Image (cartoon, rainbow, N blue to C red; front, side):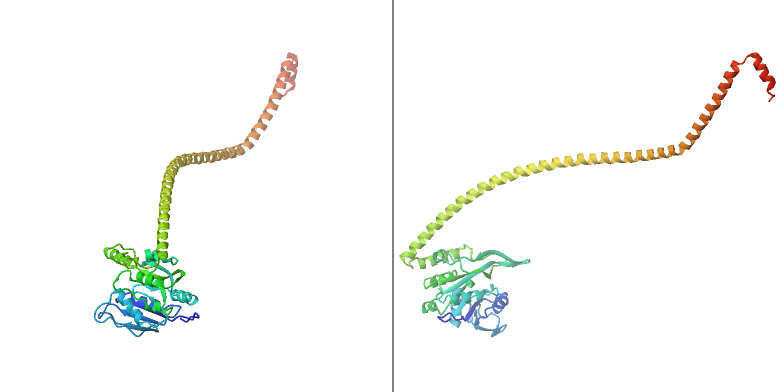
Length: 376
C-alpha cells in the first residue's frame, strides 16, 4: 500500500490443523468482495494434513508445511507472516469464516488511513444451530489503547495489519513463548507503534465448539498463567503518562462499576416492587375472572329463561291464532242466530199483541169472532 493510499494487496493467513470446517473457511475467503492477493495456508498439523491445491476457487494459495510435527499457535502465525507477500495481512483460523464484505471494509479503511498500523471491525461469536447462526457475543467496540492493556477485545480475524506501514510493524513477531493470548500480545506491540482505525459493524464469525466452550472467556489454569506472563511482560513497558492514563482508566472503570452496581441494586428493588404489584394485579385478575365466570353462568341462566319465555309466547300466539280462526268461522252462525232471534222476537211480539187483544175482548165479541172464523 503506497503512502498515497493505493489499494492494498491482502494476504490471508490460515493456521490449519485440518479441521473438517477448513473448506468452509477457504470458501469464505474466495467469496470476498475485495479479492485477496493470496491465501497463505500454514500446515500446523504436520504430516497428517490433507494435500491441498495451489489455488482455491481461482484464488492463489501458498501452503507452508510444518514438517513432520505440529506447530504451536504463535509459531504458525510467524510462519504465515514469513510467507505472506501482501501489503496487508489478516489471520483466519480454519474453523472461522469471513462474511463477504469483511476484507472490503478493512481494506477501504486502511486505504483511507495510511497512517494507521491496522484496521479492525466487528466479529460475531457463536455457533451454527439447526435454525441458523446462534450468536453469543459481539466484538464490535471502538479501539481503546488503555483497555487493550487490560483485556483483548480484538479477535484474530477482526484485524487487518498494515504490514508495509513501517519497518517497526514489519519487525513485529508473535511471542512463541505464549500459546494463549499471542494475538493480544501482538496487538499490544502494534499499538505501541501507531493507531488502529475502527470500522463498525459485524462482518465475520468466530465459531465456538458445539459444546459452547471457548478459550475467549475461559478462566482455566492455563489461561490464568498465560495472562500473568503477558502482564509481567508488559508491566515495565510504556511511559509514565501511559501508566497514569491506565490507572485513571482503571479508577474510572471502578467508579463506573460501583455506580452500575448501585443502579443494578436499585433496579432490582424496583423489579421486586413491580413483581409484587404484578402479583397483586394477577390476583385481582383471577378474582375478576372468577366473578366473570359467575356472571356468565347467571347470564346463561337468564338466556335460558328468556328462550323458554319466547317459546311460550310463540305457543300462546299459535293458540290465539287458532281461537281467531274459530271466531271467524262462528261469526256467520252467530249472525244467523241473531236474525232468528229478531224474527222470534217479532213473532213473540205479534203473539203478545194478539193475546192482549183477546184478553180485552168481551164474551159476546169472542162469540161473534168465533162464528165468523172458519174452522181450521
